[in-house]
Image (cartoon, rainbow, N blue to C red; front, side, top):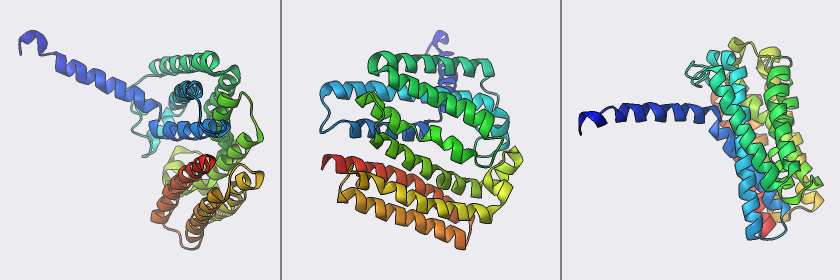
Length: 303
């Protein structure tokens, strides 16, 4: 290696590090679940096996939704960098550590949002674009700026934004928002509180330091544990709706009953004999619950 090429490695390493920081702003794990739920909505909106044209539209919709969701996540990192810096769970984020400034992050968010919105408008349909942009506003502004610091019910009300992905997916393929899409919305809407409150229970000191009025901070662990349990029962009722409405057959029903029984059992244990370990297990099970529930709905759609 000659002297002219020696500086290349550190420069490339620094560039890779910067790209990794920008990628982290998009909250990849959260976006994976968002796109997965949107894809389920797309596939359920199409009777039978999708045509190649529909596959292409779905691919463009997934990419557009990913871009706008990433933009919302990045914008959220700007608004919450002070809070993120106080919490172990989020202190690693580039904005919280000062690795990326507000102007850099805002430009990144704007570019992602513009690209995603244009892709959805021209390659999918205007309805999907406007619904996705409304979800951006709902999460990044209404939830983050208004609801989250104001009320311990922030997760319940703000859960509407997180429940939108299957609606976006349905709109992308059907060009409308049908009752089936609203049922999928309701399931995620009611799944969000027990899912997130289980996390808040074992991260309660983080939230206390941050100053956010999360339910375990304002009402205590015991009340939150009871709310987690009650919501799992309400969630069970919502998860039966696809079968009742005729969206699915007995295959989905069996899986839904088993998964919800598991969620209720975790919540019952959490209520009766709390431990941080059990709260972690409940949180992790909630992720498995939603993923397998929607996977079962999709398999049932094709069987």
